[in-house]
Length: 83
Image 1 (cartoon, one colour):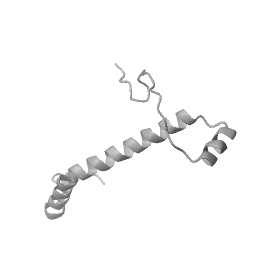
Image 2 (cartoon, helix red, strand yellow):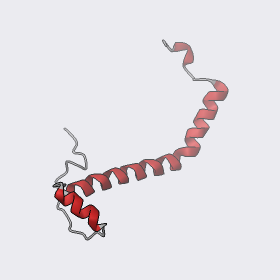
Image 3 (cartoon, rainbow, N blue to C red):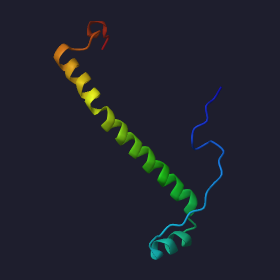
Image 4 (spheres, helix red, strand yellow):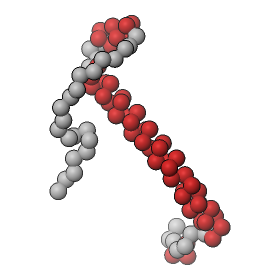
């Protein structure tokens, strides 16, 4: 069974109000830029980046501990490496 990602999941949209530089808005409209789609894509990327940064911060100590162990003891199965 194929899983559906968040960008593919059927959903209803919610209207919202934003404050934006009027000159930028006029220019975007003159270029036929879809504001909703552009904002949604940008917001999706900002959420992804923020989640990735939060995950890295939450796991920083564990990652550092693992790196320290490998630095001190080497890779556990290093003798079997083919490269």
